[in-house]
Each structure stands twice: as structure tokens, then as C-alpha cells.
Image (cartoon, rainbow, N blue to C red; front, side):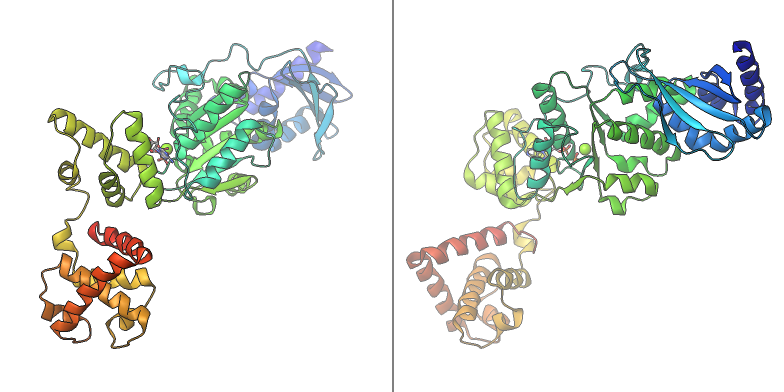
Length: 477
Ligand code: ADP
Ligand code: MG
């Protein structure tokens, strides 16, 4: 009987070899072992569930054809799948109802573990780098070091919830998206680090999608796709960073799709980052995108002023450097693009200060930031002041320049005149001209009124100072 089934499978292989390329043949058909032939049903043993799924997805019709040829129209095919020792599901069950003429029945064979034993770790394959901790996480990326603000609240708290119960929340998969330097890598690695600390037995794996792609290509070249996939299937938490780089890489997406499905079905946690929301990811297969939307998607936004201040303070504190509040605010105002850039500025500040043995003061900061911040004198013009003040008071430019005596317009108008005097070279007469053709005495009156209000109205003073900061540092509208 046994030789029968072997002979039949040999026949099958011969036919298959003529139909697929050598690489695929070696990867997907050579490892298959024929097990038995009974009642016109050929049972073949495959190394894993993953392997079975791959065959089913890519070679279904070829297998149907070959069974039809060798066993006739009544011929059937059954899979026997080797599963991990930890898996307690022993009973055979049908995965998919057969398309005539083959039958696809999966049988689990416990205690013949393959997964988790003796597979090459793709991170150690040549040219891929990443030696060090098995999880490939940077231990400095922690939740503690991640400053919370309204820009990142959802992402951080979801990540913290997942860290307590990976795979056990409805946030699976969890996808964080946002522009460059806004903290995606930091949050997902903090999540990984936290799980490693709280749940030491869990196998956490962090990989960038570029590394993943390089490893996959290497595995194809070395004929070690099985090692590659099995390695990833062991993860309890798989973090894949910057999935946008999978764009257009069809084969890598396919294997990722299978790994994704497999882990997800097994209740393992998947975490991903991307530079844009899933719906805008170009060059990704729809079936992959639709899975990204199963769980939770959270975005990271540009940090607001207060968060930037807190981040600067925390980073300087960590380095044991003190910085005057005014300076912290200056830097926070000047660098509003992203946090990586903010860090870069702080590092150059510290470097300049220590190289020149100078203290970090406003002069030094201005020098360092020369290329980033536009110079105030040349940039703050009448137009900018008028627009910024109008926006601050939430009134229209027309009303700001009008003759209306409504209190709210009058105050805004006086404040705008005050800043025009302070930050531009316009004469009193010229300023009057820009505010609906008033004369210079009206402008003088405005300057006095503003000074009075600063002295007597605390509320006004606060709002005025806030506005002054915006104008002084030329915060974009
Ligand atoms: P992304 O992956 O989105 O490009 P990163 O996670 O690499 O961004 O973040 C860039 C830098 O900014 C990192 O050094 C990170 O530690 C820091 N960073 C980002 N967000 C925060 C935050 N909320 N608090 C403290 N540091 C942050
Ligand atoms: Mg990143």
C-alpha cells in the first residue's frame, strides 16, 4: 500500500515539475510526503498549516488536475498537517468543502512538532543584520519616555491596553499611522518592551517591513521559505513597522498575508505602523487592506505647543540639562514639524553649548535655529500681524480694519496696532493708514490703551502674552 502511494505521488510530482518553476517545486512540493492511499484518496503530509494554506491558495487547480490525472475522476486528496506540540486540537476537521474532484481534509498530528525547533532565524541570515536581543526592540523606547498629549492619546492608551492583554482585546490588529517623526516606532516598541516586562514568556518580534522584505527575498534565494514563515509564526506579538514599504511587493505581501491570518486566527497580536491611513495605502492588495481595518486604527498628529514644551523639558531633564522657560518656549515655537526634528535641534543645542563651553541661552538657540526659524524682523509684516490678531480674536480682517466701535473689534484693533509698532518699522502715520486710514493720534491712543489693559486686566494680559509669543516666534497661522 505504502509503495503504492509513493508511486502515485511520484507520478504526481513528475507532472507538477513540468508545471511550476524549479524554485516553487523545491519549496512547496519537495517537502511533501505521501502517507497513504485508500479508497482513491491520497493523503499527503505537509509541514504546517501555513504550508497547507499556501498550497491551497496557489496550487489548488494544479493539485486538482494532477489528482484527476493519476487517480481518475473519483480521486481525492487529503492533507495531514504537522502541528506544534502546544496545539491541543487533535481532531481532524474539514477546512474547505472540496471542489470536485479533490477533497481537502486536514488532519492534525499532535506531538510531531516542527514549528519552533531548529528553524533558521531570518534575522541572522546574511546581509540582514539585527543581531542583539531576540525581539529586536530598542529598550529606550518605553511608555514612560513617551510624553502624552492630545496628539497621541488614543494611540498611547490603546497600546497600553494591548500590552496588558495582547491578542485579547478587540484592537487586533492595531495600526498606528502618522507622518514621519511623530512617534510611531516609539509607541509600538514601547508596547513590545512592556509586554516583554509584564509577560516574560511571550515572544515579541519587531521588524520593519523593509527587513521583512529583505529576509523574504533571502529566504527565496536560499530555499528556506519554510524557516522564514515558521520563525514568524512563533510570535505572540508581531510588530511590523512602516507597512507602506510593502507597497507593490506582491510576493512579500502574500507571505505576510498568510502569516497575518495565521497569527490572527491563533489569537496572536499584530501591530503595524504606516505613514498614512489604510485607505490611502497605495499598491497594497485589497484583501490585506481589509484585514488592517479589522481592529483599531489610531493616528498620531503633529504635537501641539504644550506637548512640545513637555517633550523638550523631559528630554533635557533626562540629560541633566536645565533650560530657561523662555528658551524652551522659543524652541517649542520654532520647531513645530515633528518630534524627531525637535530632538535634532536639542542635540545640536547641547553639542554647541558643550563645544563652545557656553551655556544654552537664547542667543545660542537663535544661532542654532537659524536655518529652521525664519528671522523675525524680515518676516513679521503688517499683513502677518493683522491676520494673526484677527484669527486670535476670531474676527474678520474687514472688521479689524473697519471703523466699527464695537468693543471686541476695538480691542483687537488696538492690540494689532501695538504689535505693528513693536515689530515693524512702520511709522505711526503709516500704521494708521493700514487700519482704515486713521490718524497717528488714534495709534498713540491704542498703544496707551493696550499698556493700561496689560496692567489692569489679568485676563487680557494672559491672552495678550499668548498672542505676543505667536507673533514673536512667527507661529504659522
Ligand atoms: P516615527 O516612527 O513616527 O517616524 P519615531 O517613533 O521614530 O517616529 O520618533 C522620532 C523620535 O521622537 C524618537 O526619538 C522618539 O523617541 C521621539 N518621540 C516621538 N514621540 C514622542 C513623545 N510623545 N514623547 C517623547 N519622545 C517622542
Ligand atoms: Mg518609524
